[in-house]
Image 1 (cartoon, rainbow, N blue to C red):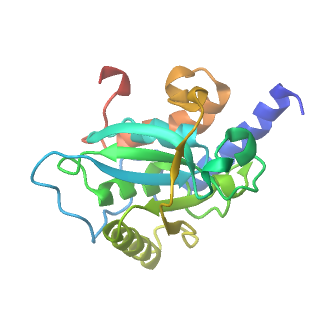
Image 2: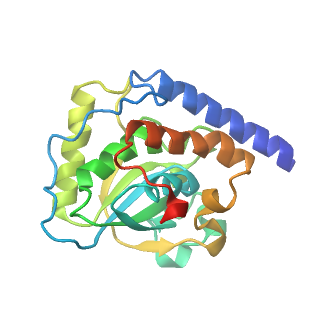
Image 3: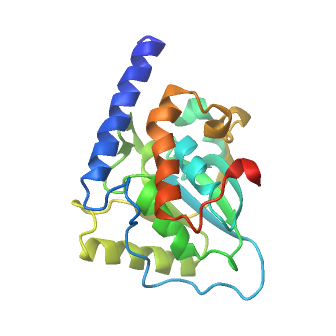
Length: 229
């Protein structure tokens, strides 16, 4: 398949995904995000660093969202779910490694809670009802997953998924995996901050830029322009 044709196929998949989000009952382009988590961790009394790891399709878009969230200190695109020996892009794209394209989010728990990060993850970062795919990106490496680092994160994540399913926030059941983090492996340098460094890329323009705009519209108090940090 030629590169232009490949881009066209991927972009069509992104458009289909965007249409689905608009039709889910919570308009991705509106200023109204999905409900906040009823079960959450309290904000810490002092600044610190905590880790969260999320997988929601291509890690370019997931990182582009979370690196613009106030209270997030650093983000890294990488792989989780498989072994260190198979944590390379060429291997992960074979869909045989067990890895998901993921983003490690280092955040200050005195400024943003884990539940707030989850709300952003489910609101604008991806479609949590698509099994082993996001739009035209198909395979287990594009699955929706929360890799928790402790039992408290597991508790909050499971409770929030149950809350959203019971409220029928999405037209279909959430398929996001909630699984322990056994290892996070940094992706190749050219994947880091890809959307930031390649804003004119057609994939970024069609698939990921709308996520950034949705973050800005739905969470204005948490949005920060990454370039101004």
